[in-house]
Structures are given as structure tokens and as C-alpha cells.
Length: 103
Image (cartoon, rainbow, N blue to C red):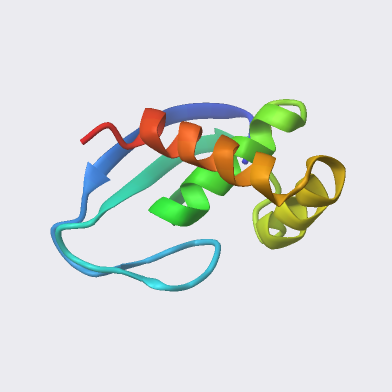
């Protein structure tokens, strides 16, 4: 997501149930997830992404202008696979996942 000013962007372990802002799946307690907050104009935003969506978002951001399309990650991954093939996309996703979620 690319909004104005990012105030924080971190990976943390869930203490309680959360809902992924992309796929709407539950993030169960004890699982790692990515949380980001920022300011866009006068509005503030707060986003939580499950491990799978956070990894896909990072790949989408790498391949574009540093932003990812919230609500469009599934289509972005399909497009990436059409350009470079699923094997390549899976390898990139594993690389990013290992970097983002070192724990």
C-alpha cells in the first residue's frame, strides 16, 4: 500500500484474533502478521496482513513503484505468473517470506 507517510511498518506475533485486511482470513493468536499504519492527507490508516498476503504485497511492491494494490493482490500474483511463470513467482515469494518473517 502506498499512502502518504508510513508511520510504522512491522512484523509482530498476534496476541488475539485479527482479520487480514486483504483476504479477510483470521490471523490466529501466536501467528506472525504484518501491521502498517500511516497518514494520507488528513486521514490515518491501519492495516493488518496475514503472512501470505504480506509476502504477496511485498512482491507486488518490488515489481511496481514500491506500492501494492490493496484488494488486488490475487490479480497481481496472477499477472506476475503470466509474465515470469509460477515457479519463478513461488521462488520470489519464498525469498520474501524468509526475509520478512525471520522469526
